[in-house]
Length: 150
Image (cartoon, rainbow, N blue to C red; front, side, top):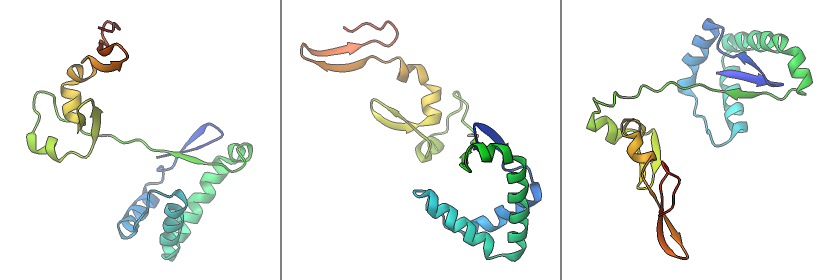
């Protein structure tokens, strides 16, 4: 996870011991990810409920704020986060039906959502398929390869 202020990025996970302490505490917290303010409030309460973690968090926050002080000033204290997720996709030649059917990481197609692993394995069939258009002249098809409407 990266913290971004004034279009500059700062590593939020560079303190391994602090990260371990946070990760140990996280399973006991229920985060409502539909609301940024609720997530922050729950997270802060979770940290403040443990004095040892509160001290580590205060030290980490001070160090990050000091490191980014000029950018924080220029951005008037506005900070966003940027997260990176690595997903282990299945090999296109070795798809497992049970994993494809249980997958929660989906891609939208003309026929509805499908597993991203299946989409990646058969990507050309999905992204190069003609797209049906309803026009005043009736049903037509747009070919993404040629760009022609037929």
